Image (cartoon, rainbow, N blue to C red; front, top):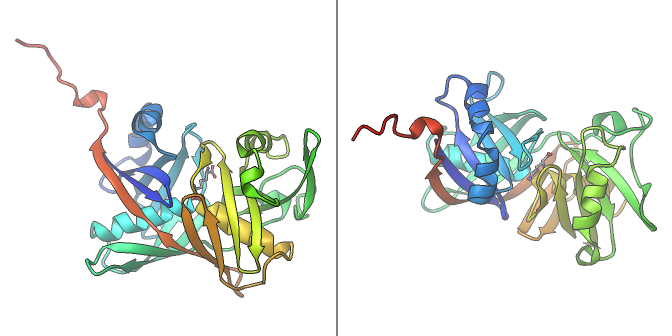
Length: 292
Ligand SMILES: N[C@H](CCC[C@H](N)C(=O)O)C(=O)O
């Protein structure tokens, strides 16, 4: 089965194009046996399936390294949008992609070779009441600046959903925080019945901050598009950055430009790039007999 490996700011995914496949789940259930090969054999932060959609132009599904299915993927959306436009699946630079977290609008920007360089995604409306994350507690109350302790360390946590759940902690220096330790503690906290992505933010000024992420189901990654969007919303809700202006988010893999507009939509602009293509060895590809 052919694949394309791509990345958005170092957050890498293996893309399988199932647009010509008849049974999306059938192909994936066949693929699911290969998740460990795909992620550990080839190496990536997860799998993206490009599928037909009944409610949008295309559909994207994301699977983390541990095989769990995510509901949205900001970096993945930019990779899929680039792949679809570059491979002539659409002639319009603006189109829609269905995710489990909702339908998003994308707009690609092409370079002098007519290939996609940057993609802007309307990530839709953030949610932050506990029921929408989901998290334990009063379902109609927000989780803004809630105390969260790990051992003898006290953190302030704000939770936002971008279709997928994010717990955001504001810290003095993102490089001083043992994210590989606190990440899983929060990911697997009983507070989050569907687990949670964990982001740490170091505010630099009213228009930019540094952000690192521990991803639900994938661990430390170089970037997280939905997480960066959730961090902008959390920083706005806790009055750390100006409302409704453009924020530059510095991630280990690069920068994203994000704005939460007056219509309550979060917009994200960033790059996407190819890494390699290949063919996944599937049992069906092997010779059927040893006739000599
Ligand atoms: N890296 C992705 C997020 C993956 C989210 C996934 N780990 C989940 O279970 O929600 C992004 O760029 O938004």
